[in-house]
Image 1 (spheres, one colour):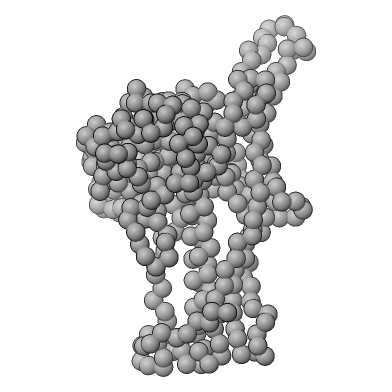
Image 2: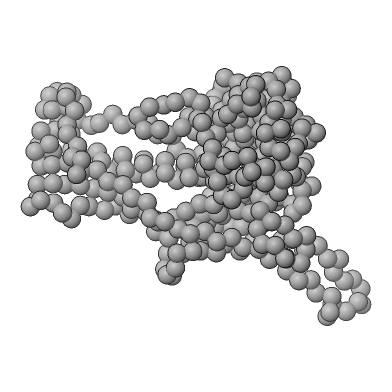
Length: 373
């Protein structure tokens, strides 16, 4: 058992009675998570039934002509283009523990300080799991864990859902070859690059459906690498849009305030963790999971997302726990327990009636771009 001792300087002194906890940024994904099939992160709640695997159904669009006039509908029905993806949930737990002596020595309530730290840990766990999903290649492997075979298969399966740099002509089914086409002059992320990705997503097969707001407006959301976000923000077209078309008040215009960018039906949301990894107490830049060299320059990846980009199964919401083995009341511990999982959703059932596809992303369009610090 690793017991938490009070740090020097936090004994009973005239220091502040509360810990100064590290600020942990809230997830940039929360506004796009919900139970609707129009949400980017489609949540399937299953808090009652037994079973390790929860199935998320996916339904392709109808492509038949239907009938008109007096033509009979009987016999002209269309068979549904059905898919599904199974996601297995898992338990995730963490805890902190201290002794009665350390608690009495402390100028703060250690147990009370543990609880928000555990809540923050749970929030970060969710956030990095979503990031891992977005970066998965063929076979559900994280980018850093996938070999050339897995990356090439991912590129081949998603030819209409990948953009290497600023032009579709850079595409190659050999993933590394596509990356080498990216340079730091022409292939930075810009609104024009994202708009090309949006056009390709709209014309891909199966189509990528946009994310819909509650009032019926349609958007694609680009979860953006920080260095790509920098380049989008500094582009001439975005500067003009923010100057001439956005509200001029200091509280909402991104010229003055940090926040999302928006242009031509695309919301750009910066995700700092694409660049900054979670590696314990050491911050190593850039994130080796999501920022990489193409042999010449540093590259990053951003994701233009529509509906049902990621599936989440929720088996048990975060639940606070306490340590039961308390050594006659001398040891106190608090923990957190949750059961869930995330997965990038894919059209992955061969043999369906209409344009059967295998391992093609449902709602994620991947944009590789220059990301030179």
